[in-house]
Length: 168
Image (cartoon, rainbow, N blue to C red; front, side):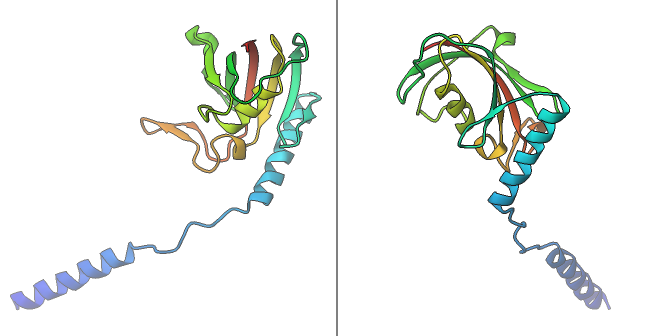
């Protein structure tokens, strides 16, 4: 009788654990559909907030807040210094160089910042201040950002960066 109890428990445990195994892959999200969806979300945000923005070839929207000086924009390999505020569209601020009193310095093309941020800075003139609306595919994409188990930037989040190019 004891042996039959152990056999029963073994099979019960086996069934419970084997039912937890999910070998189905997570559903894939079509990149073109996601891009279209995010573009519509940005346009809706701009309309709701009565904002007029221009759009780059990559699909990054922007509004120049303060005109820059000259015609020079940063090229590949340029060392730049920027101040910025980063927010999630329809959400909260997640980062600011103003709060830390430390401008961000990086080299264009080094991969040290997300693609959308770098592409934004590459079109700016010295002392220009611009608000950029960056789709998730040029930011943190499907993964988002977490820190200590807390979500900082959700997956597929469109980001708003207000950037001032201080030096190039």
